Image (cartoon, rainbow, N blue to C red; front, side):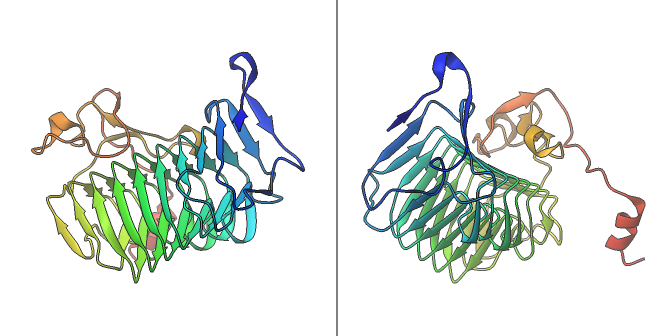
Length: 296
């Protein structure tokens, strides 16, 4: 199913019939002409898509922005109940749910690539994603300014995670400002885990984290599981504290996350160079908040 904008202009789909869609157990490719051109705005009334059991990896969602989805249970934008779709080149912004502010995934392998999760919210776990009993692969994705009770970026329950070349910055959750593991494990490779609020960047489980940059997270940057060959220095991001729609987690030209900046000669994070030499900007705050950090 192709969804196209006319002559390069953007289009926003709203209202009944453009949300609460159900794959009905069929294997479908739902493809838009790009998240900058095609937006599904759920207006806080429902999630966008339900994917039930029976779908496999030939199901593919690509090229959309999903905005303002809402679910009282889980999966504010997309809920996947036992299917195993691929999701790529999508933006998930300002969605909310009890668990999995943008995505709830259960009982199936799912692959997510080249997606952005920004400003999503869960009252429970997983501001961007919550996965149950799943085999989840995430590559080249960005998680910024997502918030949850635990796992600001994502939370895994009885699941296995493979996450590579991702940037998780300025997310909030305690425990786990970036990633929370509960009876789960996995690998985190060549990722930026920075400036998380609420708790340490990674919580629980037995993950292996390597060739990643971990810095500036509340309550410290130590990692659970097996951690080796990591950087604990400022990743030098262009503008991590801008308004949600304007956050720029591209790398400064002097960033250690560029291949030229580290001993492994590897790219780290989801973004390439996006500005000149700089320091990561400081977060705007108040004197009262600073005193509260020190209990004075």
